[in-house]
Length: 362
Image 1 (tube, one colour):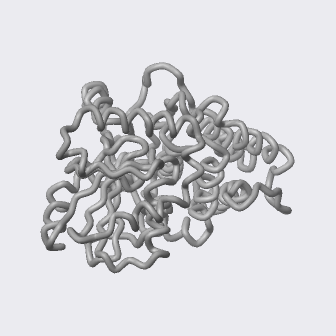
Image 2 (spheres, rainbow, N blue to C red):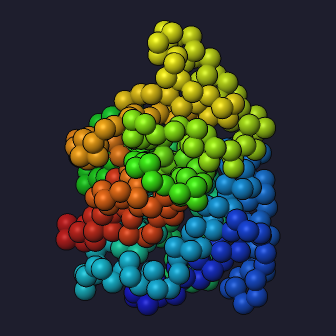
């Protein structure tokens, strides 16, 4: 498909999805195919929690709103213009194994496959298997050229030439075994990290709360680990997190918080329990690990920022995004962990470059 057509169709999709953003679901005028797709999408957004309790209307609207912002004409052009597309395409069948931790998390892989001129064979997570098929139908409706480009499967992926698979460290071992002989991108567990300096304003701390708590902390870009100066007042973290006090009333979150609190209290000795702080909403636990469970944020203290730089470099394969106001490589300011652009690739692997290179293998 010509690049201009890609820009046209993807930006139309962005305009459509922007109607379901976090402020309010509202039907806008002059959106293509709204008469066919607005009400079905609205129903999915409002009722997704009935099959996946983590997909609250709030989380659904935030995710779709971010896609509405990402799929704007100028951003799509910037994304695509960074690449030289082959003059002659040799389309492949690209399998996509999607995660289901946050709404429509596999959409970027799908759009990348389509932008590169390939066909997609998609295995969705059972936790998130409604939104993306409707998005594909929307694209097919506004431009019939998309018909036949995406196939969904409930079983094992078969008959593919390359694969993109996202999962946990455990599932990645299976993916390596099953897909290793094909051109592939296989993603493992990664987490967001925040490095505080002690100079953050209250507004910055509130923005950090979004990085930690959006999607109940389930996204790979959510901050699950903090590095704080040794004399940092941890109550500032607790205070900022209280903007999400409503989570304490949400049964799914509360059950996880209560369970993890009990596990940590029973499995640590008295000295370690002194490093376990609790405000009734979130546990702060001193821990060197990165992947904290729901309702828990790990933290470490530091004396020298250079020490943190060395740790981040050593553990870069465990880190998806770094949030900080400090001068750290690739760091984003607080509040931006869940606002990736089209060119912000998961695990730092250029998905579109990988897909375009497949045309050379024919």
